Amino acid sequence: MLSLNNNLSIKEEEIQMTAIRAQGAGGQNVNKVSSAIHCRFDIVSSSLPEFYKNKLLSFNDHHISKEGVIIIKAQNRRHQEQNKQDALERLKDIIIAAITPVKKRISSRPKRSAIKKRLDNKTKHSQKKDSRKKINY
Image (tube, rainbow, N blue to C red; front, side):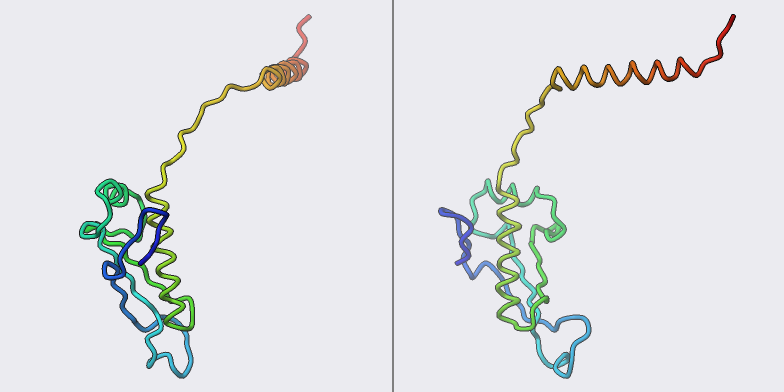
């Protein structure tokens, strides 16, 4: 069970983990050991409530495919078990980021002192420009 918060969790059966060979430079074992993990989570067929599914499907993340599948490739660690944990943590982070509500921005007004300072700077700038003009007699 992947626990997201106090009342929301995902069953292990819904998460598909596949061991694959990692990319990049390795050593003597690079072509023999499958230490990277390919993690797939199908949003549509999951046991999440509909509200969370809709939030996840509308979330803009490059890990979520058009078909509604979250695909994560974890290959940063040397051992398969560590990559598995990394993939699960990243899956959890994506889901939590999608379901947390975005705070609405409260618009604010500039302070009276800031307005006064801006107008004073405009006046000084204008006077500086005026002092550069030609004097007509």
